[in-house]
Length: 150
View 1 (tube, rainbow, N blue to C red):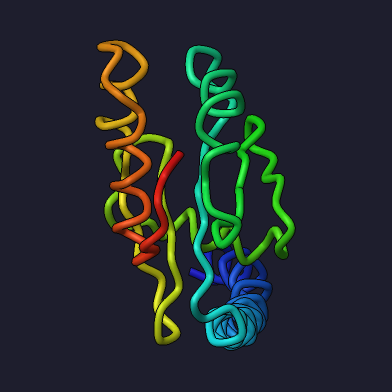
View 2 (tube, rainbow, N blue to C red):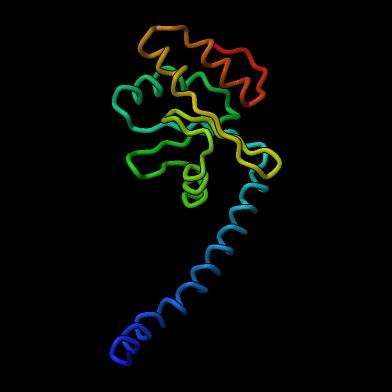
């Protein structure tokens, strides 16, 4: 029993120390993330990735027509490109509730993150040549932006 007990004790001591430290760091991050959400209340994000068949179309036809109130989040592989703190945008993307591939919309309201996948409507435009104005209107409705779409 001693032969088994000593190695188990030696292996468990780092775990006993590590778990509270990790918990403390996570709680501190969650507090900073909550502050980020409150500080950025009212922000809108259009998120897309580097998928070959959509990236070019989005950059040439969609981004140019989005209202200036919508910030862009680009996922270049696993690297996030955004004007916002990467760790907070990463946390937001990791916790998407309505994820169904990209592109995706995010908005921050009352300290809460609200998301919507626009993958299906986007690929209806890309693959079925549906008008992009309906798609852009759908984006504006999600963000409650009442501007005319070009």
